[in-house]
Image (tube, rainbow, N blue to C red; front, side, top):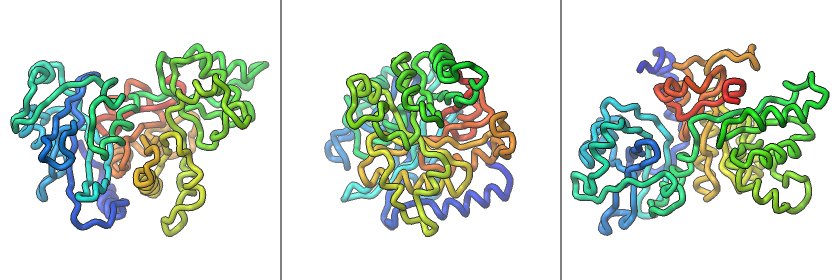
Length: 377
């Protein structure tokens, strides 16, 4: 796949020099392969004599000086398991920098889904080509923490919770012709949201907390992303009701707009007071439109990992295509969108003029998920 024009390529090169990597000279660059077939994920087991031994791990290994991360990943997986990934779609999840004390690592993490034929060929293999134990585990077991992974992998598990499609609620103004716009909004979303979907509820209205609570109560199967400014209990009181405790368990993330994200850092890139007020109880999803916001998102993501806070689990990069809701915004197009996606240290979600059927296209261009309003509800 083409990475865009010469100008875009140069922009990517220039921008990579600005990424928020720790100032560590002796850092080990590692390619990590999150290999799966549907909801079955492949794990290896590290020998007790190895660094971070007696732990399960995703397959992967050191990136050599003459290799790209993807090339290293294909080579390492073949050497360790015999699985050949040359023709598989390799999707970047993100990059992680972790200091174990005795070793510093930079993990470039990719997700690869096997074909049914590949899975059948390898699913009964209990030992890798280097003698290491191999096992297939369910996504449910993996996310539940039933398999002890190295510390740096904690963020990867959070990334894996992202669905392939995210719905975004209609604004309340969309129902302005109804006698009771709030009631119409609630009924529409209650009836039209797909089963067990993730939905970013972005109401900009005094009734937003009340409507959010009503929707989540009426649809206990959905998981909600809420604006970061919605920090107080939904009922506006100082303590949580039993119902809100249950609702709180179904809030999977808080969202930062592009403008809020950029306010997190001053002109020299130092964190502002706003950064400290971001949700400490939920992961974050941020909105990015350009290189500057991607760099800010990377810096915020690294800071939260270093501080032991819930990570940045994704970024809406938009607009991919032209949209009816923002007709004056110039669309990025797939090539420029892909260039931005490559710079992000977290999973990228396509937004703007998309529909669910475009998921495969997003995967080909470096995204992990797609989102939208009218085509997703």
